[in-house]
Amino acid sequence: MLVPSSQTISQRADWSIDQLPGLTLQNQEKLRVHNIETTGQLLERGRTQAQKMMLANLLKVNLRDISKWIAMADLAQIPSIGCRHCGLLLHAGVGSVTQLAQIPVHRLHQQVLRLHVATMRRRDLCPSIDQVQLWIKQARNF
Image (tube, rainbow, N blue to C red):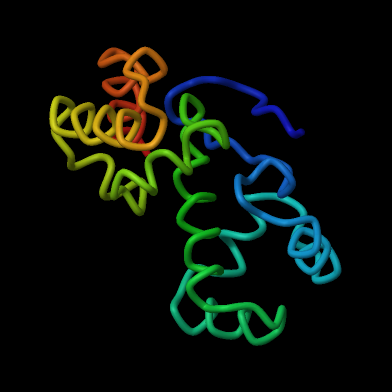
């Protein structure tokens, strides 16, 4: 795991590709063969829709999967989110740092809480409202 060198608000985190949730070993290897070893490299190679399509064709994977990986890599740039919470946010309906920066704290916390209750049947595992507020604050400073 590549640990971010700094946890400051404006510092972007870059993680080893194997830390990205839901990425199979086979897909990790496909990325590595094409010199994509970090979330930052994945973002760099998939900025535009055309680049995403090229990457999907190159790796022989579904465009939807590439888009999902890139969305999670984008969210993982936020130090307080990282690879630990990027999948949670994506499943809660947040697809980018830009979108995250625009969501009201209480609304996002409710979305995340509903997701936790629906999938895990547990409220106590849900990130706190203070944690959600930090995510949004850091997203606004990017």
